[in-house]
Length: 604
Image 1 (cartoon, helix red, strand yellow):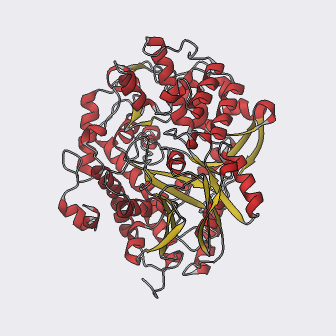
Image 2: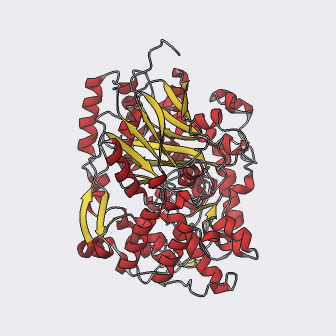
Image 3: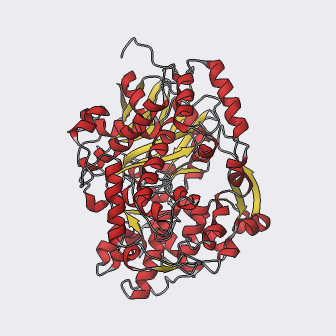
């Protein structure tokens, strides 16, 4: 690789830092690897195959964590200022990637690296600094215990305004298995990657731009950027601009797919009090955009004491209806506190809701923890962030906590592979039920947008079948490319022919002569590379499944029909999904497919 010219948009290298002493090595990234995995989640998956020891404990010093950029970062293409954080999850024990948008992506890329990988363990709390001169460690004793935002502010005051910082909160320091990594008020949220940094003694990673990288065809990139910007103001993104993702809440409640009281119901009587339409008028403060974004989906609300809280559907669902809480002030306060502690709101709300039901059933002795009790919710969050009292159990996530509690606690722990379910009721969205079951990340709505098929009207959302399997495959493949390029999913509706259009974008940046067909193959390669990593780490077909609650407890829905998802129906859909992916009945790809997609080198 030495002496060769990287494709446009790339540096052709990853910086691998041992935080035990701050030493760093350069890992060359050959062009064929970059073309095969693009960047972001795809390249991060390849890096985990190369650098993560098989069977490694996610919280062990030798477990790597990668900040991965993409060829589009630093271009004028809207929503391209994104990065992926990739590691083995301490929550699931499988591959995890979390995406985020901020100026950290641009500055990190312009350190001269396509990825920054950390491993090892600091001898004392530290911050890792990376710029064009390389890597070094700085003491962070005075930052330990601070909320991420405050740690960012203090470190920037010390280093200078040119630095961009990603930090963990107290939850990451306490190794809460769903702790986040935060930066500029944004969060790489799911899967507990903040705990991975915490286990390494890293309070923060700071990056400073020091170089430039040019696209292969600047005029073509500029023309594409103008076109994307114009289309980003169209009807496909109107919902996000006007009310944000919280606009989903009333709609989901109306069709019986709003998870309530730990998925015991799918409608919530307090939904109108949390609706975006009313909340925006009463509590709305501002609308904001991510770095390099023209959509502006971020809606800021006023919480208690005038604190500003960023509101999305998922945090309101998880801390509101899922816990039976309809008080908007309480939900905003809980959401803001999750940000300060550095907690994934979905896993925090999901684990607390499970514990509330355990208390009702007499499985956990904590009479103060009740559905609908806002003070209980806030107390639980405090205990989780500090790993004190009941919080020490709940910091493990619902799957591990259920194993410790015993009895039938696991049957109503709403998780897949250890990752708590997002705000989509699988019994009334059965393509999504499949997507949640088979996704390599666990119960996730961003790596499998199969709910789009349910809501499109093209499928019977209450009666899953083979056609739902194809929908799951299609949305997974599209997500794999968008998460590797990286572009925001809120743009997905503006592309009429996604793969050919994305191939043209990538070609203008890299100089490659890409086709839509090649990019579709790339999508399949990335999806299967994730599955291969999980297979290496002990995955089996039994992990592609849903908790018993969803298979044995039908729901009454607003249409008057009963929504039931049986084990037989889920099995049929999973079999169809495996067939569509050319996997054997146990979910394993055959040797011919590995050879065809050039994945043989990843099999150890």
